[in-house]
Image (cartoon, rainbow, N blue to C red):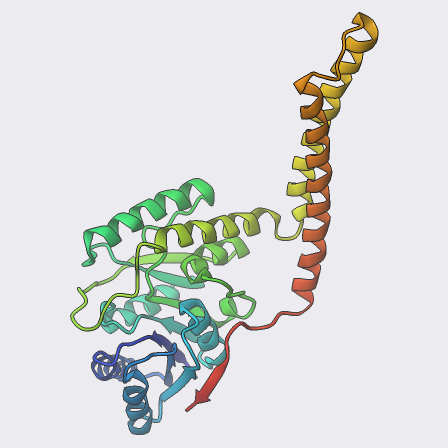
Length: 309
């Protein structure tokens, strides 16, 4: 298999037929052996029925249906695990991505890159969505030194080896390119077309920004301390305990050399508190280290597959 196209779909019944036709047309022009994997992420409309029709009419189509909505990260993870192509293309099912841009991304891959992300430089979304994206991009650059213009664009192409050890949990689909760069892969970005949504409803709400920020903190932590959490928690613990002992030592000095009472000094309580907090952080670091060892030894998926066509 040359190319696998993975398309998560959630309540996109009005877009499936047109999307299937457009992707199929592009794939046939490429002249490569391909497959299209649709992931029905627990749709509550007729999306799955439309996908069944596509699978029955086209032997290159496979459909995986989740029992309920698990989110885009789980859908992409399932697609990655079932993809057979040497190249893996991902895109949304809302027809805002242009399948005609797929050859452009593949051409960039052939220049020696491991992954290529689309850049919706003339984005056709609402002002609020574009504003959230700007804020998110600024936070990325501050916290994890992100360098991409549009890292959350769904239209991407990967070499298969990029995805073999990629861990997809929570809502990490927003940070795939950042994680790949962290792992040492070469990632490029190319300008692509973007269309306004004509059918269906957007799945993004006001909670996207705070949820994305929390995921960003996870990526930042993973970037720096995924193999040594004791260095973070232990460092904070040692600093806190040192300040506590320093404050306590100062009080002892005042007590023995100047005969000052210290029992009613707020600084005494603060010094004890700092020492206790320091010990707690050290314990947190040890626990985190143990949990990471358990995490790397074996992981379970957080979704259930109902049907594979």
